[in-house]
Length: 573
Image (cartoon, rainbow, N blue to C red):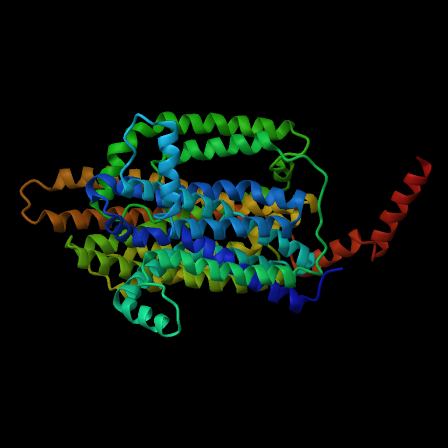
């Protein structure tokens, strides 16, 4: 029996807090990275790339954690895995906040123990390394939140009522990592303007906390974590904790981890927001020639992973699921959705930053804020559209909301391609991004529901991870290929047109606009490919799923006949 639905919704809302915070931290550092570099005393020209691993390391560990923690929750129980990895996330947040104290000192002692004859790294470098380590610990914890919470939906809600809560989890996870940049920028500005007043207010109540800065963002995570821990222990108290006596596929998890690490290095540690200025494009061009051997190695390792999964009795990912049309179609469409979303995420910052023109710090900060606001025009409607997408899934099944959403997004991409120019008003850009966001958001619930509902009781966690991981794969592929496309096309067209031109900056911006508009057409084509796959999907409405559930539980004549046949066969044997 499933718990009371109202209580289930309350518990799910509380469980979404760490899902949101964990995904928020995926990109929050990208906004505060310059301040971190300055506060640590790092020379920007030589250490900014090292500091960028605070973002890349988190993304890599987040994705790796997502691939195996869902399966762990199938084997060990949702609550146990959720609590353990939430505590890991909280510890990682604390570790980042205090990295300049005992972690850096411990690092120094260990270094001197193993390398007594070498000069230890400078204090600021030791602190940076400990921040990166803390970020990895954070990410390993945060990566478990979304897949385990999605799997919990299957435990908290009956099959025919899962579409909307699954849509909620997917929307919260998506909107979190996209709003992270905006959140980080706003909070750092707020602390900079009001830090002394906050310190004085805290001192008046007996708390000597000092002036808040970027470290305060990680301290806030501890409060969110404590609230969620209370929700888990109270809300899940009456929910049966199912555990399954199967072996964890350590070899498969290791191969998939190796493939992801190699892929990340092969793609140059591509950040989620993609290239945003000329320096980013030049950096990507300088390292692109190193990527092919690593990408080839990643492909070989991934093929080995597939071979192992096909032969393992209890695999990390059950490849048999892909024999079902709904699962195969949903997997392909998820990659398309991630690919399309990444085009929007990359196009907006590129346009805003190049239109800003100036390269002084104030203009760059203002452009970053404008880009963050415009990106919220993509992601907030995307999150909100997950609810009508779930509602429509309950009534009409998987195909209609998925196809409708992809068609709407495709139209949005076409409008962007036709109307974006060097002087297009930002509100027009934001409105068109909202159309794309609504369309992509409508696909969240039906795609996740199709995969999770197809999975057996012992595979819900791994199925949830599959849904989220494939979307990240699509985004990663898009950002990498989009970077290469922009580099080659912009440079080629600029070289062919710049002879005798005095205002080269205006010409360069014009070529950027041309290439971005072509990228939007690619987005429309990808949406069309996903739309064609969506037409293959069948079933998924609440009525159909309720009948399947009743049949499985023996509540219908068909179900009773199945149970009687099973009992008769058992007695004969």
